[in-house]
Length: 278
Image 1 (tube, helix red, strand yellow):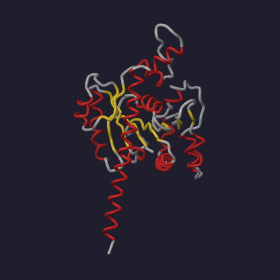
Image 2 (cartoon, rainbow, N blue to C red):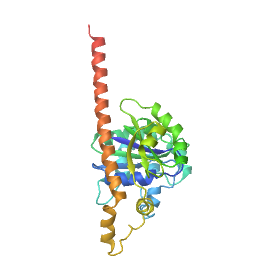
Image 3 (tube, rainbow, N blue to C red):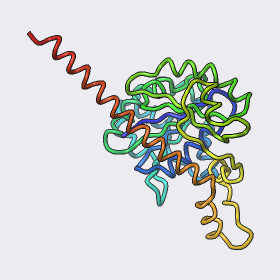
Image 4 (cartoon, one colour):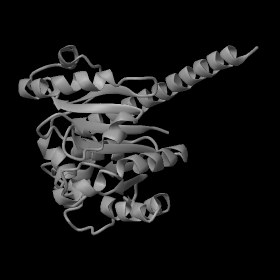
């Protein structure tokens, strides 16, 4: 299975909101990891409206100090009812970030084991370059998605990071763009040309429906009907459809990345055998 990281260059393009939306549309069982070092656990405070008090990264860091990270991970993630999604909540304060710096490498190994057992992993890695940001998770993921809006300030902020991330592309690690709000004002092709990276998927710009994921807001109600009608309207909205298409496109892209990795490793192994043969 795959390890996908979502990152941003600046501002708030919607990494956490989009990551949660993708996870809830994901075609396979998935673990969503909140690894943004900025703290405050946007998932707990937003989508769950502050009504969950569950273990998270800090508890996992404590388990790691005792050499029990792999054993603790399954009980520290929280399953989302009626879905195939599990969540590893992030830190609750920016003051906890320095203590997490030593967690990223062992967490990477543990998440690789999770992926090997049949679950994909989506990591919300937050803003690039912050103190204690999860560099190891980003660099060693199968796919890194730079999340950006299509506005000129967003593209200017993303350009240098796009160049830096592109330098890290190796067999087994790809970097693409995830565009939020295509056409406001620039289209996907224009954004790809400007940043020098392909666009893996686009998510619609719909603040009212995005607030369901970012703030735990009620689903916008149609003119007539109650909660069931609101839920039906949400599921059939253009915003929900864009998340579904994006999840499918990204999932397919990770399949291609894995096949390329296996092919590359096979070529290296064959070359090694030739070099050592008498």
